[in-house]
Length: 320
Ligand code: ADP
Ligand code: ZN
Image (cartoon, rainbow, N blue to C red; front, side):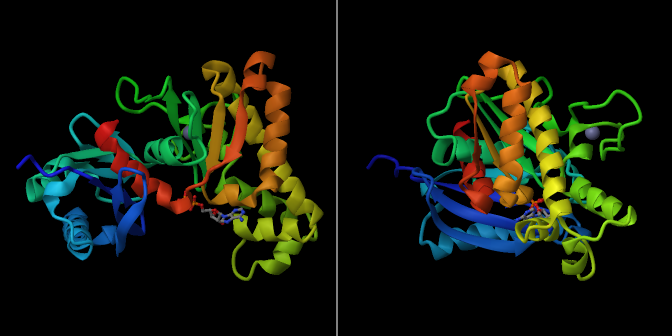
């Protein structure tokens, strides 16, 4: 008998709070999935042993033998050594410094393991099964605590000389005296336009004496979600904040569009759930500020796969 067809892949999406594990078929459908807590404070060995158990459980529950699993892919929010399957640094997951996750997990299951950055995984998922289907030059960005991106050029994921390509959030928008960024520099794109930037701007308006709906809505703390709700209820200040954010994102994307000439930009992440409040100014600014030929070629769309993009994309690493 010939070797059993390897019909499935496993995708693992590691976040600061939870780890999602999913068995995914070749059409990008999740056959079975499970979530376990990350609990980084317990040490990486603890997290890895939970992940290994969850991978085993998912195969068992779906009644699928490991012989029919082609590969296991991991998406991490951080810098990865993709050639060796090592997590170099994951800023939101303390303790994960130079962890050879591919070695550890492939020894356990005798299945090939690949590791990459989580936004790149999302880009692969949207390209193959989501809002980016059919595109060959695609930029997928996520707007949340920071701004990350996955770049697809000529149908291929771009990783760069040291696997660190795609750091769109650290494009410089200001020469001097710009806001401090998490990377240590000043004036980066994500220091102007991201979840924390929305909150900072909202607090600034309150300090300036503006009376706002979000001040009422926020029970303990102002979040981008609360500012969005206030904007939807017609709050002028909240609407203005999203307009300014959209303008910044449009400016940042104009540079990327001029540089790479993509046909599609897919925007996801929690802050993108603000929808038109953000997308309308993004599209307007992008059309205005990109060069005409590149600007005319690009379409801006909302991500389609939501929080399943991470596991589906991670499962695709085995062929990318
Ligand atoms: P990360 O993984 O980077 O922490 P997410 O992509 O999960 O971030 O996004 C979380 C952020 O999205 C939170 O700051 C939350 O307030 C914000 N958010 C959630 N829903 C909305 C919304 N409808 N409008 C604006 N921001 C939102
Ligand atoms: Zn930066």
